[in-house]
Length: 557
Image 1 (cartoon, one colour):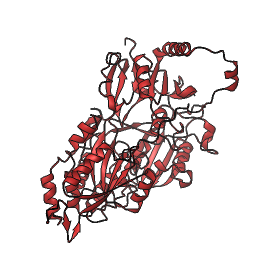
Image 2 (cartoon, helix red, strand yellow; image 1 turned 90 degrees about the vertical axis):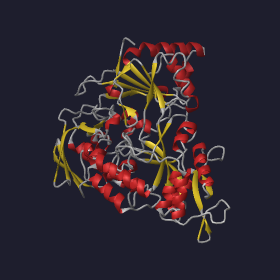
Image 3 (spheres, rainbow, N blue to C red; image 1 turned 60 degrees about the vertical axis):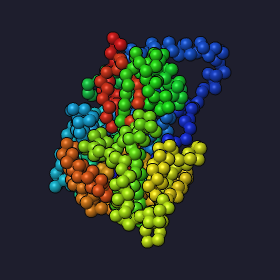
Image 4 (cartoon, rainbow, N blue to C red; image 1 turned 135 degrees about the vertical axis):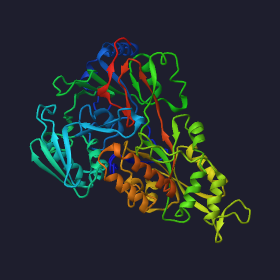
């Protein structure tokens, strides 16, 4: 989302979703005294009592399925995707909020609205950002928000010793955070950088008094949001609405985030009426699950469309992939439509690259390149790579065309089916491939050292981000060492823009430059399918999630 929203732009080797889910509760071990005093009861009776307790709260409680255990609920210290979903904008707030455009998530870039900052202005030729804080904002312990809290949070992120690595790059242009008054501050920039404002929409503000001596806060979760965490028993995070919150109160009084690693068990809970939101169905059984008896009548389909995609990265510093004609040819050998339909089971969409409405680069989506082996062959011929002896392998100056390909190790020791389809297409075009399968750590080292020609990767970022880390010269995740004056110029033009609505045409120029120079080949964007209970209203998908505090419950359903 942001200039280097390497902050939120997390790079992962494609096909790796982490190890097996942990099944223990998030924090609390059973009380041995309670265990000793407990009277044995049947499992059926316990389940029945739990079901009754859950249903007694349903009128005022939204229950969400959590399929991966957060490491913690601290908003800055290595937060997982679920940590951010649970506490950002509910428990902790940002200075600025980045909402979808008025016409909906597909209508273009988003829009900024006040958060903890009630107003802001740009001055000093774009090198100063002045923020005026909401005078009514208070932390959950009753202390008023001040500019000191904002300075503390931003300086904590900027300090490499604090290891808030996922956000620090987004503030790389910031040279100082200065207090002006108790309710206003100045952020000085080394250069005009509109992505800093986008970054402020992703940074939860911490209380200086709570976290100054120990960034963990001793486990406390003290924010300024309309909800606070009241309990976390047995893998259920319970948030309750604060009657004293300064703004219009959310319609739903209680939120329960329920950790259940077994997707089938989560579906059964949904059928019993115990869950309102199941973000992702089991891929192998979609869409049958959504139309199953007991679900279709109560739930509607939900597609989160996160700004995440899988792609083929080219090493632009090594022959033959240092030639853009070769890179474009390789991209034309990928049948993205079949990848999405036959391998992705409808849970992915074909893409050209990182730019689409609601994508990491928010702009008009260029059409995905169609499979065209003939055009690819012409480009390879033009680059000097021909099959002159008819043995099915292309050569140039006596050297056979061979490419080292990095693939993440799967449980069965084979490439992911999606990757295998791509490799088969490359081989059919006369390319020799040396497929190197390894662990994530091994492949990360090879990427860092530039020891590859092709690599299958996956990008997880934020909507409407600065793409400099991915494709800019020297970008933190530009492992292919690609460098282009045209691309860098387009990135610089985007950086100079402060209003998202003005980035559309510039994003189009960046998309055109990437299509011509092909530092990477987009494969598919992720399109997970979930379920949302029909009683839930006000859901708008944006940035791969739903604003929980904007939801309401229809008592008629």
